[in-house]
Image (tube, rainbow, N blue to C red; front, side, top):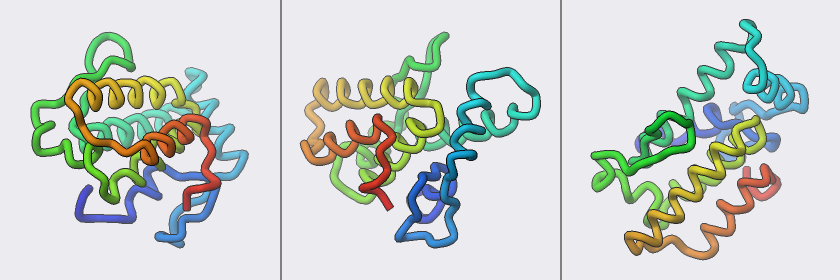
Length: 153
């Protein structure tokens, strides 16, 4: 995930065009409604859509060195490989923008509770371990929880 730079726009689409990947999908209101319905019902026709998006979330979370644990979907721990992965969100680099897109997409498409709990975990761990995450980055991540993608492209 560190080598390829255009996957993030495909895995976590937004309602605005990407200035970095002109071929990436742009969400319509119908797309958003379909994703939200997929997560809020048990209809067979939506199963693959919801499952694939949740796999993308899990893969990206693992990339960050975080894994979901416990009976609920909102319990997280730092993964065993976190020492090698921590740069993905504890230092300022291009991954800060990826995380903003990730959180925004989840918030738009019906996984806002997951995004809220994940960000709360990241903030807790950053404070606990004295990771330097700028106020500006935190402001972007907080904005992402509202699903506001106008600042992202």
